[in-house]
Image (cartoon, rainbow, N blue to C red; front, side, top):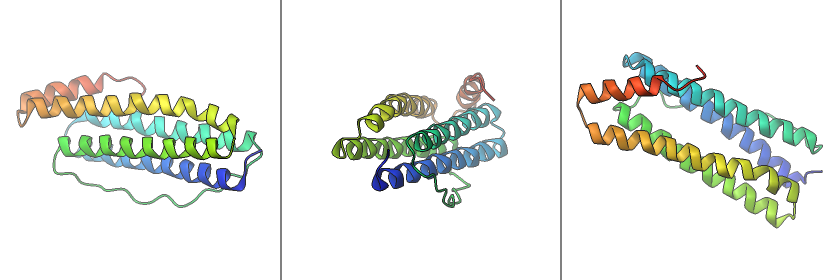
Length: 164
């Protein structure tokens, strides 16, 4: 059974995961407007993953006899200066989410909630992948700079990600 404090923290994380999905959907819309369908597809896939993450937390809270309480999801940013700026924001956001997950692990350890600590291990590992993916794209975009051909090639590569 979850403590009230842990239940609240996990509910807050459900909201954070849904907000992440909103951010990535907003980025997908931005990329569509910029005629970058590959980047848009990549972001839609990312949004789907964030909803899946929220549902993992949702199911876990219920399995542990906690009560899921959904909160309003904030409106995300809608415009970025450039594709690079959008992916830099995605990278920063993944770093923020990693920090949130680490705080949940610390809380679980402090409360001697070993089941929750074990559950969170998957998310710790997932965030390593999430940060690396976003950082890799940022690094490629910085490498090509303002070249349209380079952006076209990266967009094409991003469109190859499955799940859209």
